[in-house]
Image 1: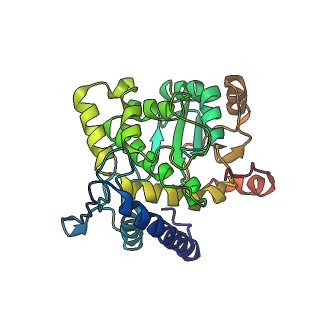
Image 2 (image 1 turned 135 degrees about the horizontal axis):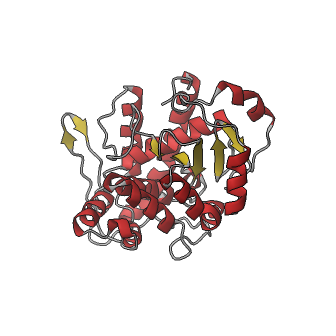
Image 3 (image 1 turned 135 degrees about the vertical axis):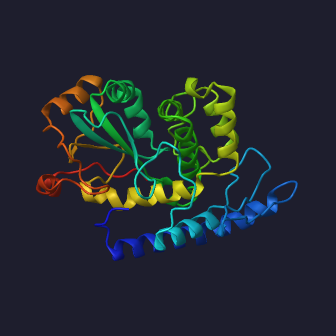
Length: 314
């Protein structure tokens, strides 16, 4: 994580995780009693590191024991341990940086998003193609940071973290698979935009979404993706990504999603390709050397303190 994150912020994050675990523990107890065919709870040791515990392999639901995952992820972060599974195309010391595009791109963009956020889906419908084209054409270098705050709502479920984990599975295959899966996730076919607690909570549904992605059409690639989703391979990574969102977004003045930061400064979220291009044209060019992960450029601090932001989706 960013070196600028204070110990107080980390302690606050741990408290949020602890509160979440308590709430989920109650829900999990009831859910386990209703699972037909029994429950499998496994804790695997790999190279001395406790693996992800599988709570339910009955199909159609979330197969991840997020209580155990949160504990493991939190412990790993405290100990500076990065032995958790990291997608092949992620970067950074902690593996939590998803940055695509050319380093020589004229503009540097950070997109803050939440998988179940209806406004994020609207943004993707309106600007997603232009945004992705700008990445692929070398016009921008984009970093993607995902939150899971919908899971924190009463009865919010675990669909957001589960979707981030699936995005990690796609990213592990290729950058194109990640971009294609993100588009499919927000598509009208798969995104209900109703903030439903069950959105993306089903591993089966997340795998089905993967079947619609061209970059996952190779049988071997899809098999690797499906295995990673069903085995919760990137669950810890997803938890830490969501925690990164909570720690980094305030540094840029981002309080809602989608949030867009261009060359270190938060901007009003554009809702058309033309508006997106105008935002890029009006922004100062990206510095040759980007700020450290999670840190905004010094010159953007003053403007971020005065800008207003959209309220977070809850």
